[in-house]
Image 1 (cartoon, rainbow, N blue to C red):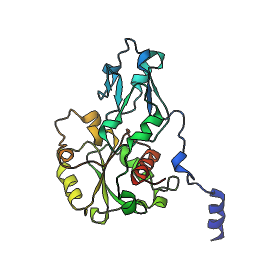
Image 2: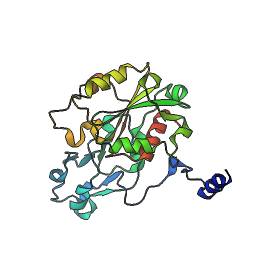
Image 3: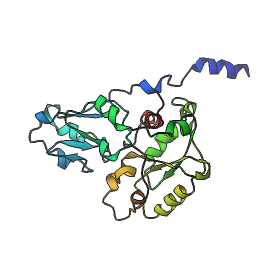
Image 4: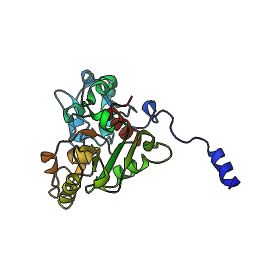
Length: 251
């Protein structure tokens, strides 16, 4: 017993104390800064594996972007530069498109719109059921890490549960294959209203690198409104937690 107490004391406090202002390492690819005035003849659109880049005007769709960094590598004069800023969640799919001159502050000020009553209903307790709809397990691993001792998502009252019957919302990862489409809809219908729907990662938001596959069935997104989009491939646990807290209106 005393050895366990001594060991726990030596470990110290491992949890990130202020996750709202947590900074990631400089090599982490987060919010991209675009300066179109520096754009020359760089082959940015063709180098993107998921067609996330548009020209005239120059923009990046974070809902498609895998943050591979290839566009940054081929762009001269720092036309595109990925920062390590990680609060990327948005309640509006269109607001995931980053344009030239848009700053990180501009993005975060407008990306998440807090709906009336959400904070009152779920601000202190939010239970989520996660469904992997043919994902590669990258997003799933990061979501699992949200509950570990470092990120400790549970301190905010946010937890993953084993059954949709016990949940307030649905977290979707993966591009949604033909085989997983019925199971995803079943999970959604098993949650009592009101249901919060969160799409996590490029695959869930747009199909990601699988968007042209004939083995996908994304009709779910035509029938069900997504409340929160969290881009990344995969998104960092801090990105996920901050996006949910922003959505809930937690300061």
